[in-house]
Image 1 (cartoon, rainbow, N blue to C red):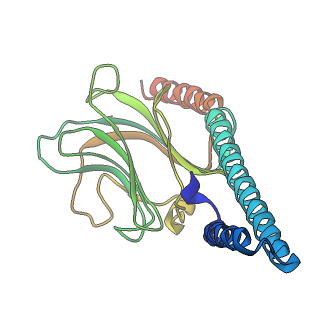
Image 2 (spheres, rainbow, N blue to C red; image 1 turned 180 degrees about the vertical axis):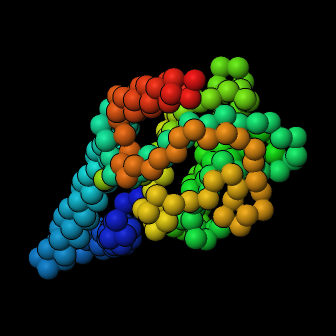
Length: 255
């Protein structure tokens, strides 16, 4: 778009218009006395050449900007394709949980991590309508959420599921992803950073309620872990297999 060209282009265009007006005036005078100085011709030629050079330089800058924008988009798409295939710096919180249905019209927290309710907060909860919500509030206070409705093909109450909450930091963008067992929902990408809270690094957090201890839930947790990396899908599947084996062996011991 021409509005995106360099400011010097507009200066050159203004000079060019002025030059055209001057040239027309000079031509009119030349018709009268049939004379024009070499200096006048030189000034006219300089203005025209400068205007042309400035125009082509502005066009080149615009094309380079469009090329760079395309390269950034390609890089983002390539990184997006690697989510779930490779591992990224960040975290994966895995919970093996059976959630009970509560009728209260409020949030029901499965876990809540952070020191500030409005910044750098990581949460998993049921909302007013019992949708399962994975939420991150970034360092700038902007919330990002993945919402999963309670359905037979997503999750049901009083049934154990592996819930995976991930956050990854790539060179192109940050992303969050939520999985129920092997059902991976589309990742959500954003630019703002998340400063991972200290209590996440220490594998501590609030479960069954929020960090302000006001909105509790009712559930049974059999396993809860925090890993300081966004896992690949294969890695998560291996974790689930190992936990399944452990739980089955534990059940045999109890029996």
